[in-house]
Image (cartoon, rainbow, N blue to C red; front, side, top):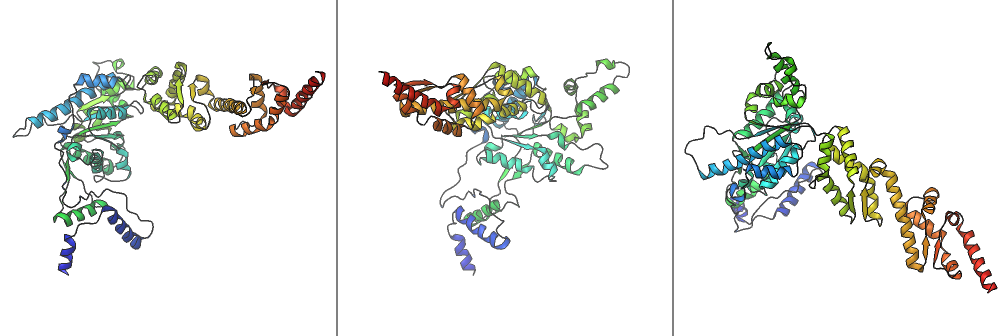
Length: 514
């Protein structure tokens, strides 16, 4: 028996597809049809091959940007957030330059000032927090992952799942652990894991998540394999079969940059109360800011701790960048920028169908006005644009229309404008078809188009079919009358057969007189 097992161990392992198939059959036999194996890359090298090392992460990053260069780049895409952009560009550049310097100047003893420039971003929803971080990661060339802090608190996981952020970063790096170790992990809605101040006793779930994230932010190693991941465990089995032992893959978070963000509603009230207590008659209460954005600028570590964060957690976020709410004019500037993600996105959506999309300046201002009323920042721009254009995006690809101009009227009455465009297109389609088939021109003036809209089916395909039926015999009537064109008036449309009979009789009468 031992000999048989040893012989099996020496065989070349089957390919990953075969492994998945066998595991799937085993699970279905034991647990039923509702269990399946996820498509996972088992990463099993062929016999005689070795996984190549890609060197250190910094070798893979062509990073030479200075703070002013990164700031100038970001300002092409991010409007009215100059103060935050300055802080982010400076501290993120410094982080990567310092990582490189420390790699080139190893020290025998740990540095006293070893706290990383992890960043806390404070700002309302829709002001571009995620967008800025993505731009920076892409510009520098480092992997980037985003997670929502609420995911960890809502599911009740205290520490295990936050490690998945690191594993996701490795996947974003294409499996290159050395590159992932210099990536950026961005956690949004961090304010939602602040301990609730009105609770009796410790808020275990939220403080637990803070401590789990704190561990990542400091300097720890995360195991790439998790006990609950069947695929990774099978990979370990195959590696053991191939090499005699399984090498544990660990990822260091020492050089990773962590950025946390949140809206922090309620923080201005905490700052206001602290400032009011500190007046003591020496500072006038009138000097305390009334605007929330100005109050947040005065927030300190004490305020964040009172908000519900552990002191150690706040201490690992030494850099604070505040983003302000966007005014209507600021939203217009975002739209009118040549790098506007909203306009570029919709333009490309229509271009995919061969349709050119253009926006008038007035329409951009109308979108900004409506988005500002929604109160969700730049995110509202996409919502307004999508709502106005969804019917056109659905219907125009089936038409012959190849250019659409977005106007204020189109935004205010999208359904009516879409219908008018498609009816006009259907009429033009009918006219072209009649000309191509018979070599004859049917002129349909504006008054006649209005009659068609008022009296015929407005569904484009049905409208074309109805017009074809109405003018089935007009080829012969026009030829008898020796005419190459006909103006189709509302009277003609009201009774096309009667008009055709009268035209033929008139043609015969004229021939008899001749």
